[in-house]
Length: 512
Image (tube, rainbow, N blue to C red; front, side, top):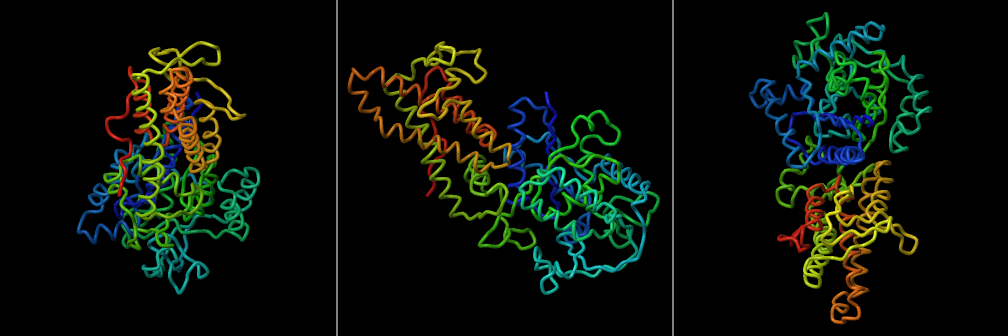
């Protein structure tokens, strides 16, 4: 059994969860489920980032103690597990005592390497990004990602990290590992950024100005800069530094991140790991933004979509489907209610739902809920009333067959989808499944089982067609498991029942 570690970034708790983070964690969930289904021992981490200036100000605005404020909002993010049917195995908070201790140990190791020093500095700062900004990164003295927030001028004595020391090491790593950042265009961006020269960055704040943070070891007047402490969660989640066995078993891990996190995740964090004497991450998958009317969705811009509301109205799997199919996994995509309803009706209600309904209705009508056995690759019969308990995929499983040079059956479909999942093309993996749904619909329309049913001479042909269609639905259901787990379970429950019959309630009722 292989160990596989996957982590999302940690969202700030200065506002409720929005659809942008829902996209990232659903994408990660598919990868984690797919790995687990193939026998990997998966450690799937997510959580909340609870330090920093904007969280401190958020607590002040609501008249709450910062910890009470963080507790309130962290619970909302953990509630996504139920709302989005997530399979994560660990939920870390950066206010956890163990994480705080791990961040302090990490600081000490970087300091022991000579990579932390103190100096006075003056810089423009975007509170929305919690990042320093150069003039070239600003438009009309505003951060393009948070144009409604004034850029602030920070002038104080802080600790700095010797980021500049790791320019060559990072460039060598990017060259040696061309799949370190996916997609390739994002790797090129970070290579270009690094090649231009790295500037040491501030990693502390004066406690009297911003008390919400991890105390700097040996200096009670300073707290760690939020990006320094938060990134350590990826290893503190594994029990680092105490639990070396678990850490060494799972690290390095794979990370998911939005494109506005490219510099922090694929460069700053990797330099910090090298400084602490630890291996860099295994791989980083960078996804794009969810756009609304051509504009990036953002909590600070006030144009976000509430994932809880959509999950409640349309169902969890419908929301998962839209995020995974409509939004390109590695690029930007649009989210509008009109597109959501159109995709829901076309693909889920009229596509998958209608196929399951019409096939199972025909099996019930023409074969009293039974379908005849079909031979597997060894020539043995399966299907019908045979439970076929030895089959790893259930009753009636067809190992493989070929029609017109195209492989059919569950393994063939899962293999085609799996090729895309492993390359983080989740939208394309779903496209493969929906191609199969369309092929099945086309076969029904062309072969007209309702006509066969009127001719006793075509009884055997009808039974073979119905058996094929049930097995195709089974394969579709099995392949959908990491994407739409609830729907997958319902489909498999229908075809594996003692008698096949249409679902009591449509899988996806049509929406007007």
